[in-house]
Length: 129
Image 1 (cartoon, rainbow, N blue to C red):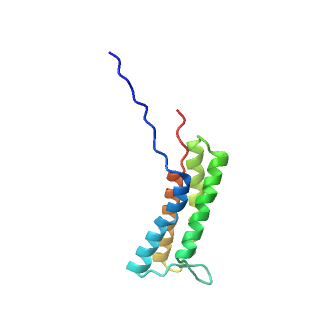
Image 2: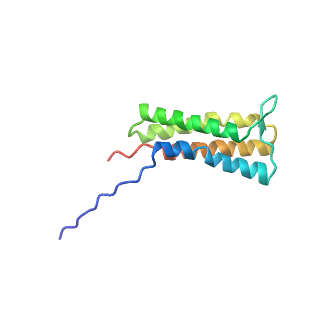
Image 3: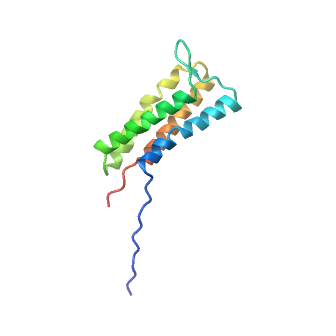
């Protein structure tokens, strides 16, 4: 007896959707921190307030840059993609160390992780069978 196997096609998220989704996750963290817990998200010396406009701008730029890097270097190379994204996340986590309060540092780090997770998983190259 033979069984027919139905090919499964993994649904792929379009790259433009990742660029749109990238700012949504950190905006949710910002809203929770700023509106619910009244955390002043400030970093640097002198202190610069991190607001929705800067969150959207940086998140979209990161997603676009990651899309370009993935397109140029990582077609089908999942290990290299995840390693590169992990290193980029570790480097980006230096930024929240300059926050003015520990609560702001935690929230800013969480925003970095949410953008990294969205971009890394959303733009991950397909597995080569």
